Length: 214
Image (cartoon, rainbow, N blue to C red; front, side, top):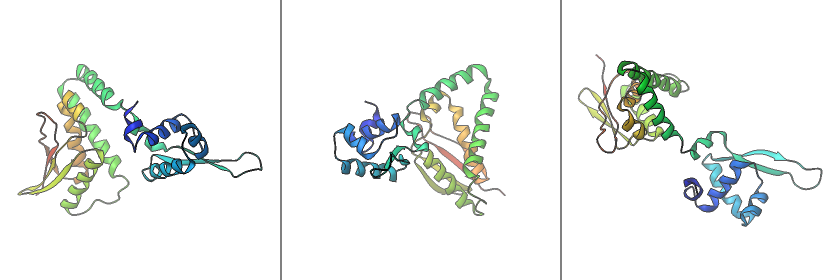
């Protein structure tokens, strides 16, 4: 079985996800296929709805008799949660890029990707906070949302974003310059000079120095 069929809230919830990935279903249809009660299915669906994994896709009306059935499906933004393809595909892509581009060109690609990511993730936030600390904490929140574990520490010339994990660890092991994409992301969010000094020995850990401008 795939990891999410047993890990996301137990086997029943995982089987509900597997069925809904194939086609929309009602509570009654799910209960019948899983051989559990309607109430058991409703409890699982409510939990999955709270976490944004499933949604009420539509109402199915069949003739004039009987109560319309609510049809459930996988939420549009949740499908990527069930994919294990991103890491191996990204690693293969990095190897391909490395074979075709020289060092400066490859670095420029990663930095451009980081800048684009910063623009995308801040475009809906409105005006950036005036205080540097608030911008640094916003950058830390974005890195955390991407999968990092980040602490913000004050330093003599600014702040340090100290990580205890890396959201791109597999990619970083394949190509260390990937860290420069996150460096540009932090720079774009903070509007400050940022220096990447990540730990790439063993388990990759993010670390970015954010310096105050004069």
